Amino acid sequence: FLEGNCTIGISVYLESRHGNQLPIPRRKYIQNLLKANMEGTYGSEWPSEEKIKHREMVAPEARYILI
Image (cartoon, rainbow, N blue to C red; front, side):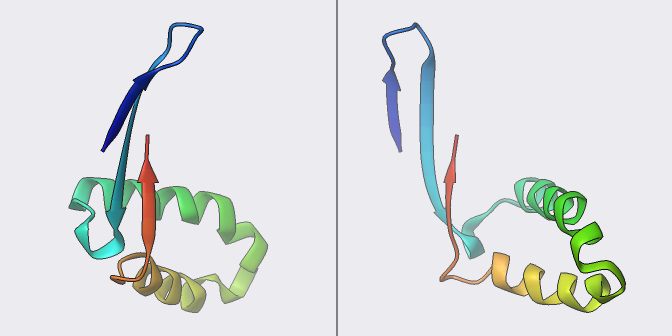
């Protein structure tokens, strides 16, 4: 993790994780955010794309920077 203060008085905590290390509540939040942002773009293809995206999101190769 990395923690620091910027010059305007905001304290920031950064944490990096692999997709397979995400806690379940965080994973669900990210999945819901992905759906809200992408369902309209994919349209009728979204149900099959959603399954693919979920697998990609939790793969060990997936990287996240959490703020």
